[in-house]
Image 1 (cartoon, one colour):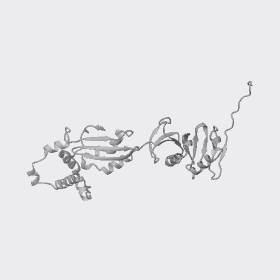
Image 2: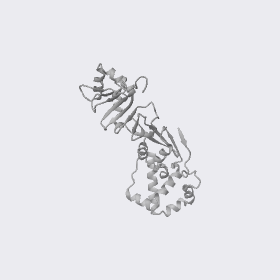
Image 3: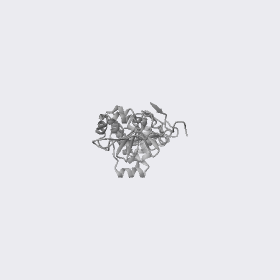
Image 4: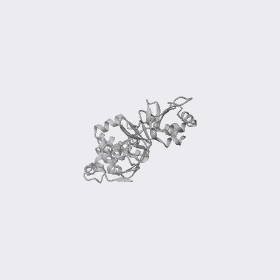
Length: 294
């Protein structure tokens, strides 16, 4: 768990905090009870409503007329000051569960400059912003009174490295882009390329799991015209798959007596898009100079 220290400018312990000066300027209760302007009645109602929400864990909806009244009297800052003075400020944040997501991205999603107190923290909105970060799969926020928020996230797992338009990105099993990498990074991950490849990669590799003799030789799976795959195997062998029924096409190929010969010949292009037969084009033999030289 990574713990981030006190946030400057928050919490009643911070020197010069508005709540401290406000507390020093507060008149005796008798004075307030005797001459309480209308804006303070709005403030009292808002503070009690916010405290009830914090204690009961309920969502509170403030009507437009109340919002306008508070805004007109600078009521929001007064409520925040009162809540901070009462121990509901945010003084510390802890974050755990992240490895590839940066601290700065997480704190940007928390939007702490605009969340001075627990009452101002909208957990659902913060969780939604955190889940929009590329690596984040789930996010949970826990209020730990007084003054601490615990953020726990889980991250997505890299599934493949996708190359397109000269750039390589890590993707997860759903096709979500995680982060850019160099083409040589993450060598243990499968390689895919072409437009539309991320969305269909999981189903392709699930299918190839039934053909280990091909999966073990796969160097790159290329999406052609965003509708079908071409498999690049070791020794330069290529397999053109149909847009549908790929498993049946591969099963028919491997059932053929000639399959081993074609699959073992370097540089062979094998087309299995026909449902009844396959075609193989052998690589042209490399011309050798005559013995004895020119």
